[in-house]
Amino acid sequence: MITKVRKAVFPAAGLGTRFLPATKAQPKEMLPLVDKPLIQYGVEEALHSGVPNVIIVTGRGKTAIEDHFDVSFELEQMLESRHKSDLLKIVRSVSDMLNVAYVRQKEALGLGHAVLRARELVAHEPFAVILSDDVIHAEVPAVRQLLDVYDFYGASVVALMEVPKEAISAYGVVDAEPVSHNGEKDRLFRIRNMVEKPRPEDAPSNLAIIGRYILTPEIFDSIDAVEPGAGGEIQLTDALKHLLRSRPIYGYKFEGTRYDAGDKLGFLRATVEFALRRSDLGAEFREYLKSLAL
Ligand code: G1P
Image (cartoon, rainbow, N blue to C red; front, side):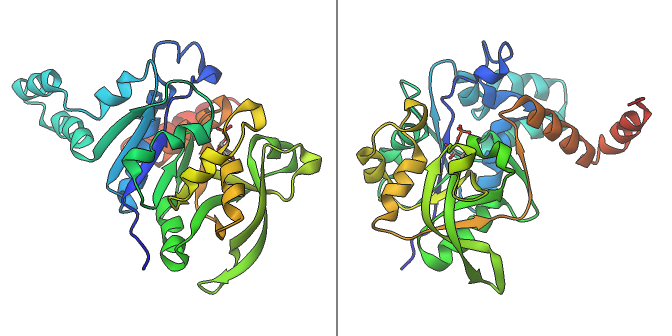
């Protein structure tokens, strides 16, 4: 029997140094794409994928995330007394949308280390991991696409994307063989090996891991077992490689557009494209962009 995925883990304890000084006094997960904080895009993706419980792994200086998903009593009262019912609805929907639990990662020792902090809250269940730096615009939410594979094979699944050789060293990279699935031959892969942040000449392929994972609970023992890897950190990729010895792992080239919002240029691209897609802003913003003498 395949156990349903009910929980999504959001590692959010990173220091956000790439966005200093904006992240000096606020978490990078709270930087807004148009008018929603980054992490809310990931949270909504989990909810729209049918995963109702969210576990956020936080650290020092991250209380704004907790406040964001909590009830803001004073703000609600003020909006109510001023009869701002539309705004009140928006504010309430953020706290109403999810069941959330928080756990602290006391030191930023790597993605694997962050995921391991959620062990007690996840318990012995399969779960999703969402890296909110990777924002994915897709008709079917990316996590849902991975869950469809998980529901079929009952094994761990990671999101994959083809990446140009010169950019490959920023990612976990897989060596994988295609598997036909749902009449398609080039989306699903069975992973043979993987390596975190290889040099371009050592990369086993151009298939990079993107920040969406469905993991079976055996991953926790594997995280426990691995030594610090790339950058001296406990890497999730190394734990997955360890898990490969005893379990199959799949990779799925999801359909959709991914933005690296952890990078300044990627963040700007996401901002422009999400603004253009908005029904309330898109048309005017498009006219403005066209008017720029570029
Ligand atoms: C993390 C993972 C890496 C993955 C990437 C996707 O790296 O360690 O395997 O390819 O996310 O965004 P980071 O971007 O945190 O360095």
